Amino acid sequence: MQGLASFDRWLTRRSPRPSSAARVGRPADLASGAQPAQASPLSFPTRPVAAHQHLLSPQGQLLATLPRSAAPAQILRAALGLQSSDWCGVLADESLGHGLQQAWRLALWRREGASAAGLQWLSEPVWARPGQRPAALLQAAQRQAVQALWQQGWRLRDVEMSLDLH
Image (cartoon, rainbow, N blue to C red; front, side):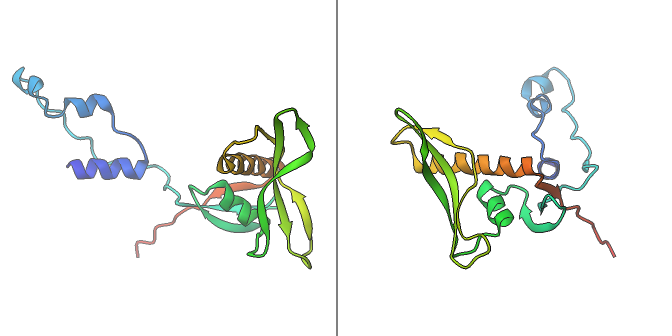
């Protein structure tokens, strides 16, 4: 029965209720004559849990199918159509800077011959002091670039799963 309850929690992605889990099989409850709590019947979500999402452009075009837990880097790769010859990373924006604070931005450099060759800024400045971890800067800049995509009209839509029982 415990296996079914954990499977049910996994399906609905909810945590166990501490009050019912604490009551089941506690010796003090059994000694007082109380019956152990009965396991709840198996319940299913009203809507299937989508494992994937569609990335839609501002014009409504389907560009990619991404996992539900897609990282900002995956979303950017799909939205921008990054190729292996393109470079996407964090660069210092020399036009901005205050004392010890330096402005860093996510930049895209496309290979020559592409339709949009050259440097393109993808995010707003991320302010950091010298010595900040590069991975943290990259993640912050990627999050800001994804926020810019959402403001431009990009969106993720859950893929509805259909069960064919035939």
